[in-house]
Image: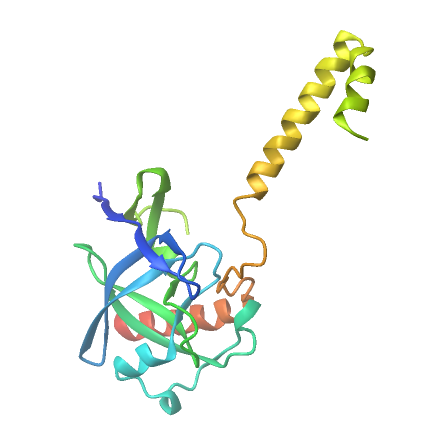
Length: 143
Length: 72
């Protein structure tokens, strides 16, 4: 049985200075030999993973070289995005490939959404106890 | 209508109707308290790109092609 790992909800402040506790997952993204540690917001409402522009640049991705156009919806509908595939290390789990819509804006955090973060990991939220639990998908799980 | 005007009318109600009124008021208070969790005039940020079906397809294709390259 694959072990799960617990992570705390993290305090975040909005632009008005109000604080909130959010399920931000620490992870290391690797791309082209570069590794960057960051936090991704677990967002079951998001269809896809989203990578803000400056973080993609920090990873060494070049906008002009990413030719796969990705059409976003919702409040990011007006933002241009391109597909980028990145290796992600979470906790002590084996690295996985995560595909991101690399968006041409920094007005968004890293979003970990259904395609494909939640295809790779099962998550249980315990907000009242201020932690969440992450477990890699089991090999015999339904697709 | 003020409470002073209302109370005499409530007194005339049957036991069943009084219970219904109590239930109604309890529900009203609950709804008001729930709504007070949201602050009037505050902007709540929602970033989630909901229903990005085309983006899902595009990224799924990218993932598949990467997996194929690794398997080759």
